Length: 240
Image (cartoon, rainbow, N blue to C red; front, side, top):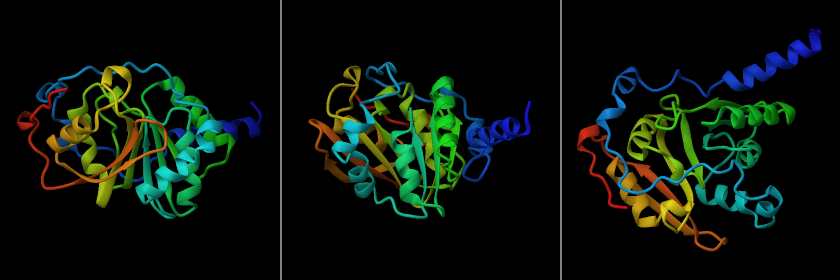
C-alpha cells in the first residue's frame, strides 16, 4: 500500500470514528434495558430509501436554507443530523456552522453510513463526523448539541419513546430538537403533528415553534426539553 493510499484510509477512518465530544450516553442510561420502555401505539414505516428527493429539486425550493433558518442554526453551533442518509443536510449544515462548528451525521444502515463518510472525506468537510447509530438509541455524547435535526425520518424510528428518552441528555442547555415530517399517517411515511407533539411530550419535550413548509403537507416542529425525563415505566403512550 502506498503512503498516499494509507493516509486516505486513515483520514476516512477518522471521519467515521470522530465524535463531537464525550463518549456516548451516561452509564446509567446504558444500563436501562429496552424492555422497560413502552412500544409505539401506531405503525412504524419501513426504511425504503436513503434519498427523499433529488438534491437539485430540494435546493430549487431552498429547502435546507429555510429549515436551517427556522431552526436557528448559526455559525459555531454543534448539530446532530440523525438519519443523515446520503448527506443532503450534512453538507449544508457543515457550511452553515462553519469551521468553528461541528456536525455529527448518523445513520443506522452501515452501507449508507459508509457512503456518507466517503462523501464527507471527498468534499473535505473537516468539521463533520459520521457515526453508526442503532434503531432505538442514537448513542449521542452527552451535553454536546445545540440542535438535533431529524428530517423525513421520525416515522421510521422503531422505538420512539426509548429513542427520544436516550437522546435527551445529548442536548446542551438551550438545545432544541428540530423535526421535519409530512402530515399523513406513519404507515404512509409521515407523522400527524398532534401525534408527534404527544410522543415528544410523553418523554419531556415541549412544543416550541410550529411552521408549515412549502412542500404540500410538510411541516417543521421545534421541541424544547423541560423538567426531568420520566422513568421509562411511567411514559404515557399516545394513541396513533
